[in-house]
Length: 366
Image (tube, rainbow, N blue to C red; front, side, top):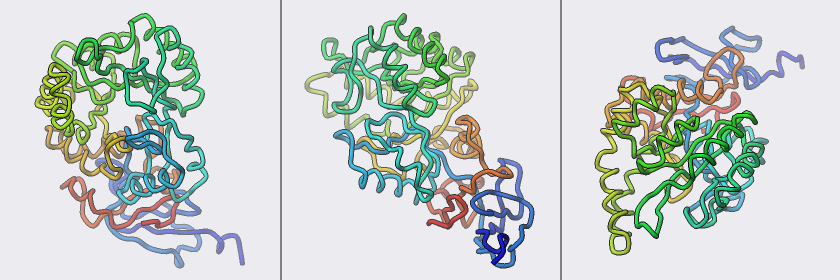
């Protein structure tokens, strides 16, 4: 048998959405890589048909983590498979205490960009999730997680302060500046969990690259984010849990509960104002804590409900998200990671909820 005959060839026929406005009639995957040139062995290729998008991105996800902390490898595998079946083929893992490097050796599982383990203030985050430290150790731990991750570090920027009864910033300005500078020196970008308003200005002026949730954005800080090009990942499917969280804490922390309700009530206005100001917005679900995996289609729909144009919301989990994370989409020579649908997802993002085929490394896996 010749080398050409041994090549693994897949043909994707229909409408290939190379970019928001660039559509081709077909692509080929040869030994897991994309080409738009008809290859040798094309006559024997497996063919799938439909509307093809680059594999979807969940830019805030947690593989290897549940509500109690780290999980075993079998559970992490189920989480990754659930994301895969939803069409999520690239995950930015925004903090996990588990070692999931073994996933990198599996061609049938989504690719992961890790941010190391969360870095939180002592007793100011969910138990068993984070390194819990004091400000004097922040730079050292950021350096450690920058080396452990895949180009990202995750801080917990605010959390409930029980002595105050509300959300407050976790880190002094000077320590944040030094820590972000150290991450950048090591070639890593920094993101932070932030629900409230208080920590945002210090984090952005200190040079942070992204903020998760960002429900505390206001007319004072939105221009600052836009000027500095700081991205947000709103995780609206997670923000939907705020009313239940507020109800659960009402008796002990009424001020915090009222604050969480306010943040929830203005969530759509906040996201739309951020988008209108030019702040980059990307899709993330916060799956893996208390939320199930596989929610990426629901998050895209939530961005549209907030007022982001459908094509822009689609880009926030496809072409734009991959470009932001430094990963290819459907370019010549890129890994053949793509999702095929029966209808055009640009016309109706709800199509994302029902993938027809999922392709990883040129293999149909779902």
